[in-house]
Image 1 (tube, chains in turn red, yellow):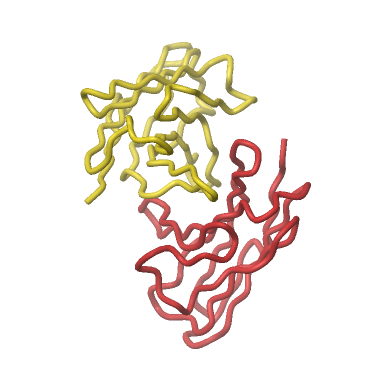
Image 2 (tube, rainbow over the protein chains, first blue to last red):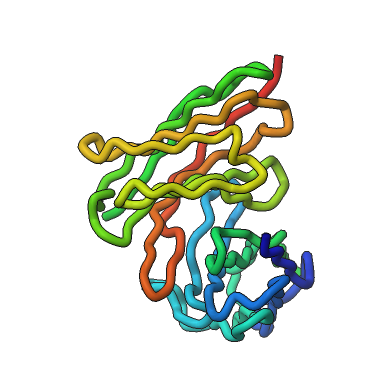
Length: 106
Length: 121
C-alpha cells in the first residue's frame, strides 16, 4: 500500500501570507496526486489534480507542484476563506489520502 | 450541474450491516471513464477511501476493509449502493460518495454532503 504523509500537520498564518504544504508518498506515484480543501462540516472540494492542474473555478492563488514522491501545495496570498484543512490524495495505486494539514488564523 | 447525495441509517448497532445509497444527477454511470466512490471520515480524523465502482462495473476496494464491503450500481436509477458488514463503533464516521473521473489523470469531484453514521448499542 502507498502511504501518504503531510507536513506540517497544522499551521497558523495571517491573511496575505504565502503558505506551502508538503505531501510525500512512500513510493513514486508519478503525478497522480490531487489536493482537496475541506472546511468544517463540509465535504472536501477538489483544488488541484495531476499534481499541478488547477480545477475549474479554483482561484489562481492555489498552485501545485512536484512529481515522484514529493509534492507541494502553495497558496500565494492567503485569504480569509482559505482557512481550512487540506488533504493530498494519491491515485496511482487505488487511493490513499494524507493525514491533512489544518490552516488556521494566526 | 452534478450533485450526489448519500442516504441511509444514522444509527446502527454493532455487528449489523450498514447499507448506504448514493443518488446522483448530472452525469451517467454508463459513460466511459466515470465512476462513483465512497470515502469516510471519522469525527475529527482524516479521510479514508473505501470503494469505487466504474462505468463498466469494475470494482475496487480498500484492502483493509475488502472482506466487509460490497459496492453495486443501478445505472437506470442513478444510484450506487455500499454495504458494510459487521459494523463496529470504530466505523462511526461521516460517509461520502463522490463522482470519480478516470482519464490521463483521475480524481474525486464533486462530493456529496455526507451522512453521519453512528455505531452504538
